[in-house]
Image 1 (cartoon, rainbow, N blue to C red):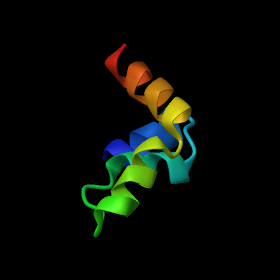
Image 2 (image 1 turned 135 degrees about the vertical axis):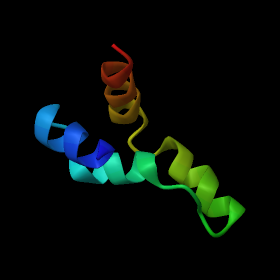
Image 3 (image 1 turned 90 degrees about the vertical axis):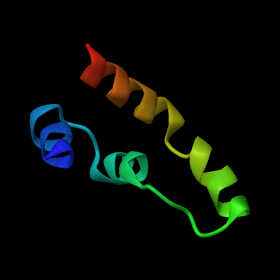
Image 4 (image 1 turned 180 degrees about the vertical axis):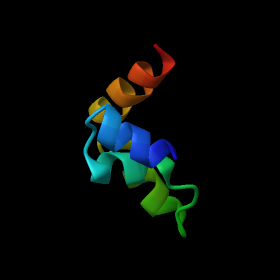
Length: 51
């Protein structure tokens, strides 16, 4: 439901949404890199949801 609303109603890119919704990364190095990926877009998306 969140993915649909974020994409169809709020116009966010699917790759940014999927990255934000990811719950686990298999290794610690991967999670360090994934944390920063799309960070600006993810912050804006989450703020828009909060507003």
